[in-house]
Amino acid sequence: MTPDMTRRGLLIILSSPSGAGKSTLSRRLLDWDPSLRFSVSATTRKPRPGEVDGEHYHFMTEESFKRSVAEQGMLEHAHVFGNFYGSPRAPVEEAIGQGCDVLFDIDWQGAQQIRNSALGQHTLSVFILPPSIEELHRRLVSRGQDAPEVIAKRMQKSWDEISHWDGYDFVLVNDDLDATFERLKTIVTATRLRRSQQPALVEHVRHLQTEFEELS
Image 1 (cartoon, one colour):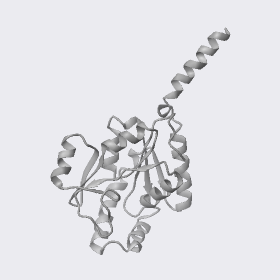
Image 2 (cartoon, helix red, strand yellow):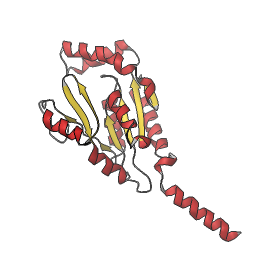
Image 3 (cartoon, rainbow, N blue to C red):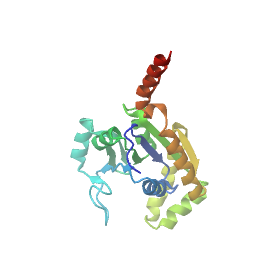
Image 4 (cartoon, rainbow, N blue to C red):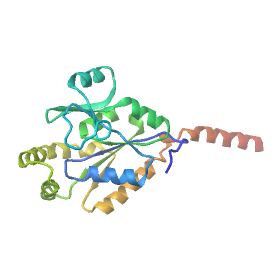
């Protein structure tokens, strides 16, 4: 797919507790529509092995991160597990102005900040719930990415994330990944047709009115 210059771009937010599936669903969305742009977050944490600056994260010092926040350079930001994370504003504004949708993989705090920003009317937020806490724990363990103490911290934080489910436009229970992805595609497709996303509609209606008056 190519960017649609007849509409404004959407800020598509996916949130969930760790292990509920938002990262996998994000990758599937990007494969489904190559015109989607992923919002690469900025962070003050150190790069992990294999991570590339500008691709996985924009790695910043704490000083430069705080300066960017003070200068309104972040759409949202939060302090998580001892590090700062945020979404740079400039590339997002550029993308949606060109009719491109921007995908965010962020937590409820970031989602709330974006929804309350000047770009809030162009935001679609979706929360992904796990089918059960037992399954959530199983998925975290099976990933094999984190030590037991890290998994324990993520599980403790999971309820705080889940408790904010009602602040989102849509909520999906990810009990079947393929079915959840189909529902997610439907939501994105429908929201792209929202009146606020189609500025050309006003001119089209004016043209129809002119045609109507000419026939009268």
